[in-house]
Picture 1 (tube, rainbow, N blue to C red):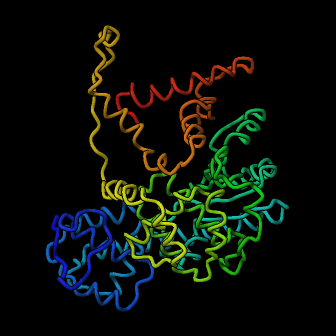
Picture 2: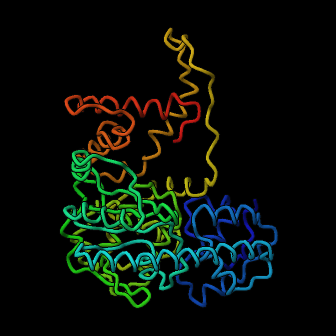
Picture 3: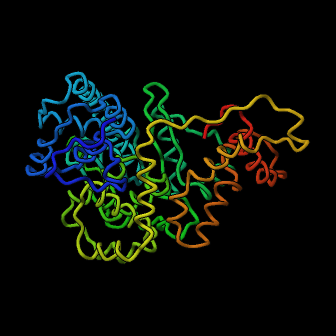
Length: 433
């Protein structure tokens, strides 16, 4: 990969990598994925001279970060002579495929919302096609894989029945008692359409329960916004609440996708009336300040998002943001997983002091380190403890389905969960980390 091919007078990106080590492919990518490129920015990109870019790597980044439609939109507008026809054809194919998928899912969303409303089941939708419209103003510029519906917790049973009648199978086959338990401890359940393969996530809470920053269920329903799809008004979150959710969601997943940062920049850029004072009031209780600040900081430094002085003050007050953003960026460009250590079959020598700790160090480090950014955003000890408990101790439907225990012995699921995790991440020959 090449590193410095930009004209001298074109400013570098806000990357946290050392300027001399920023591959040209990353520089071009960061410029092109700015959601709302002004004419002056487009002209700056024309001054680039990427004569020997690694286009397979560029396309791999586009695919990994789900940004092909946006990249195709800008590259087809710029008509840069340096872009190989083959590369533009790959992006065009991804653009068309995403357009078809987006229209298909959007039509399904409209149909389901109409069914829910006709059945008297309160429903909001968020992310997916609605975020594409709210942030990008164009349904086909954002890639999304599934639909997200939010219902009140009390509406789960009729909502599940309605989805099953429409051909959707739930992720978990739970007894009524365990379903009631999961409604108390969980916050979402996935459904797959048995014929069309469409995926839908049914939420009864926006974020995992028990954290200080998880919004009360009723708050999501106050002053909802509406987005029109195919002439139908779809209830959704107002932009301020959506921004809080997107930053908390990105932190929860350690910001491993550049598309999530693009969503932040696009939403803020496309919502000039965003109520920043409201966000200042709610940024602590509804999403830890660091989650919101990190999302905005990444969008500002990587994509050039302009933020008001009020928000600049938030960012300047947290000295940890630059280091966290550097960790995020190092992971963003790791398109392929690092090779995992392998081992032979279980041997009795493990239990005679011969456990291959060096072989498992990478497993343990990967397991613990995957949530490093998220843990750093959990600003209270109670939240960090809650995260550890939910990740390693609290039983989930996966344990219930893996081991059938009579109700009097349900307490055994608590030691069974960490045992199952040890087996999954340490003892299996090819752990799915």
